[in-house]
Image 1: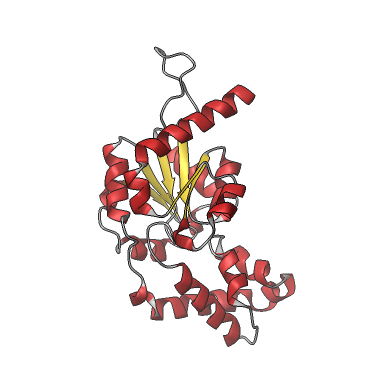
Image 2 (image 1 turned 180 degrees about the vertical axis):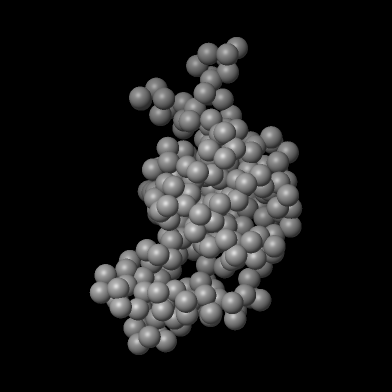
Length: 241
């Protein structure tokens, strides 16, 4: 998804689009999710350690149960666990707030002329509720929820469909988990990691992050630098290709 300017042959063009994750990227919800999944599993008599659940946050809920247990548990109680997670999450929804700098990031992306799209693993109703917590979402051109794509993260479907909706030609993705990184790689776009989901910079870089920042505020402040790094990464990929 890289193009070059006609008057500057060989010079990488800045991205025209960005795909944002939601949980752990714009809203501080990751550890609420962990607690709610743990409670949901315990409701059905299955004990899953919090650290294992944390590692799975970011992938689609349709994949998470089997990821942290096994296929047998998924077949027997998977739907029940997901329903109970939704119940617990609704009860704790008041604990969730927008991450520091989320509004500034959206404004910086809009001002830079980027087409801003959002791809969340959550279902549409929950995605809309979480977005209501974030000021400045008018900058987002398109939103795709997990139940609107054929396959959830780390599959590339959410990102690919999101980019098609805005006719992106050179895009990058922003997220807080290795699942976001894998999804971006599979979709053929660069990935920028944020630390607000509790995954280390080393892990995000190992998963393929071009840049890693503390959170939305730092990304807003360093946006020009990050855009240059994304463009150079794409140019390097083109040269290797």
